[in-house]
Length: 137
Image 1: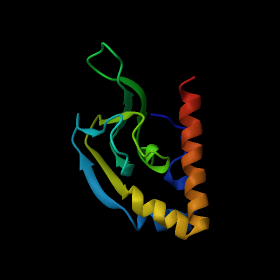
Image 2: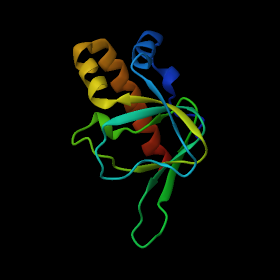
Image 3: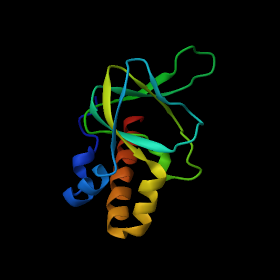
C-alpha cells in the first residue's frame, strides 16, 4: 500500500466531518468489483478496512493490470468529480473491504453550495490524483 498517498485525514477536520456526515457504510467481498472502466462514476469511497486494487484492462489479457493498492483512509475513485463522470480505471476488493460510500451528485452539489468545502475537497482530490500520477512513472 502506498504510505505517502493523501488520506482522508488530509482534509481539514470541519470539511472531513461534513463529508463523513454524507457517508453510507458499505462492504465488498474479496474479488468483488467496486467499479469498472467506462461505466458511470456516480459515487466514490473511502476505505475503512481492507484493500482495493485500482486496475486497467489490457487488451489480450484475462486479468486487468493492477495500478495501485489502496487501503485505510484512501480515496477510491476520482472520476466522479470530472465530466463526463465516467471511470477511467477499474477497482476490485482484494480482501473484505469496509468503506464509506458517497453519492457523487450530492457531494458535487454541496461543493457548489459551500465554496470553502468545495475548495478543500477539490484540493484533496487533486493531491490524490497528483500522487497517483507520480506513482505510475
